[in-house]
Image (cartoon, rainbow over all chains, first blue to last red; front, top):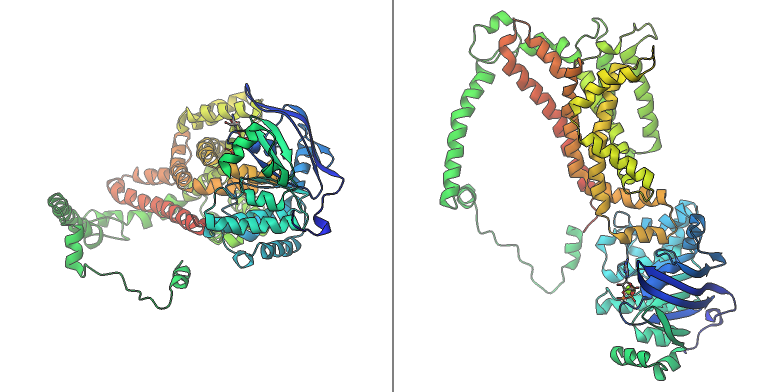
Length: 254
Length: 367
Ligand SMILES: Nc1ncnc2c1ncn2[C@@H]1O[C@H](COP(=O)(O)OP(=O)(O)OP(=O)(O)O)[C@@H](O)[C@H]1O
Ligand SMILES: [Mg+2]
């Protein structure tokens, strides 16, 4: 691992605890017995073949998908059918999607301040100042008055990252944030994510960008057929994978 | 986006204007009207048709016509007798509203139209505008009904002509739109009772003609009311129009909602927005924008359909015109009267549709 400042080191508190979680789509058992604990400031990269349930798993963490068995506890709140709990968890958990999902009818600035104003009840002026700060951080402050449709894919994804940062989340989930991007834009998004990691943001990243995993992750997980098959620190994970399926997957992807 | 194109121009490279291959009117005609034999044939036929119809119409309407004469004078001319309008202007526009009180409906209409024009600008869509509308509503109602400030009471049965048409259609549209949106949301609700209720309502209303709804409201509905309770006839017609229009709007809006990508809901959810906020701030602004063209179609139809209230003996502007034509003096000039009415309807409808196109333009945010 690279040198990181102290703030970036994981500490003892669990932000996410998943215990023996199962999920079905109809009869199809997509996730079976997921156990996962994420500490504050931890960076976790999840990889695995297509259809293995990576998206489904991280989408369960903010209840975009409902799990049917087991427990998911986020920042001390257990996810149940209680809508108030769900909204509380969602406000604490940021999410960055493969296809950005910016709101096309709102300006970049409005995209960023929507959550803070309506969910966090922050005064508009203050929300805009915070938004501007994060836009500068992702290097697109000059685009604040434009609409998403007027930006490139890489710029849109950086706006999406800034949008989730504006909610001051405890953890951010990334679902293949660079796989809809042209190669030359991937780096600009990864750079922003690396900056975030260095500042100590807790991150759960589904990605196949192994360079990112190697330089940033505290733990790398391999998922297959709805289970976490193997997890390790990046060094051992890549150099010395234990399971056959991991070895096969890595040989295909590297 | 001319600004962006300008930015993209790099120094050290020559930029040419696009070539102008076809110059002048003759070239345009050849390129557009006479480019193929069938196109040429169509063009010739069209020109012939215009030549045959337009000059006689022009002569009839403008040369041989009388604009403000007695009915007797009209008998001696070959042209149009537009005099039917100015000679009957009071009855056509205001119907049975008592003589001497005409200023009241005129003022009410002026307030309505003025406020509509004022409300066109989107930057004025604030809370204060809502208050203005509420106050205007009270003022208009008071003007029409009277009973205070020395204005004699005018029963709604005497409300007729243009004020009635405008009122029924305008408030019909204003109330039906939000109701339609709610019905559309209800139809997509996960709660089975709400969903079923909305589906039944929408399908039932869409299954019957407006005329039968109006009949029901005027004939059947009062039978169900307890003894002594009466609900104003105009109000009942208004409610029938609102219910009818709302069902159609609901279906159009539902189409818009279905066109929204799932990612928009997920992004809103993941910010922690609740259902109401998600709909109001994220989904509806986009969905309603997509369905502006079909929505306007429904609103235009609703505007014109208000003329069906004649069948429950309300005197909208179409009916007052017909009554005027039943006067033996003016019977022969129905063409003129209907052309005038058509023009009046056209003005209102065209204003609506051109405004909707402007809204679409203003709300366009690229891609
Ligand atoms: N809404 C759904 N209904 C039924 N099956 C689904 C649904 N969503 C996903 N699945 C199935 O669940 C499995 C896991 O899907 P998921 O999207 O989590 O995979 P993934 O690991 O993210 O794959 P990818 O790398 O392609 O994104 C797949 O087999 C998929 O077909
Ligand atoms: Mg996926």
